[in-house]
Image (tube, rainbow, N blue to C red):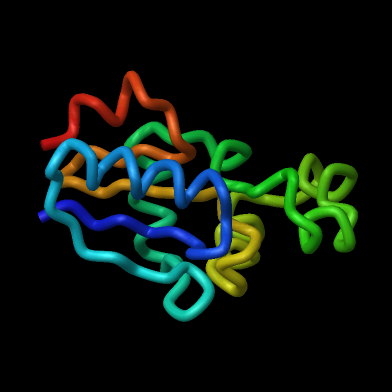
Length: 115
């Protein structure tokens, strides 16, 4: 079953959820604020080809308040993964996990392939 990781108050997450519902896609909902992605999950997604930069919610208030735009280039992959695993609000959403397929951010064309 598809795992849909989102922040329920996020407008993009709502749009993605409506998209899945409209297509009849069954999914397990996971609130990113209550159960953020673990270090191991994030590391596996990164090793599967998702760049670390794409995993960060660069438009989020926490990202900005921590001045991560300036700090990330000087951080190791390990440090970035630990940071992401520490607070779900730093992680870009929504995330769809279906088997080995992981989609970060909502793109209707890519999400249309999910069943």
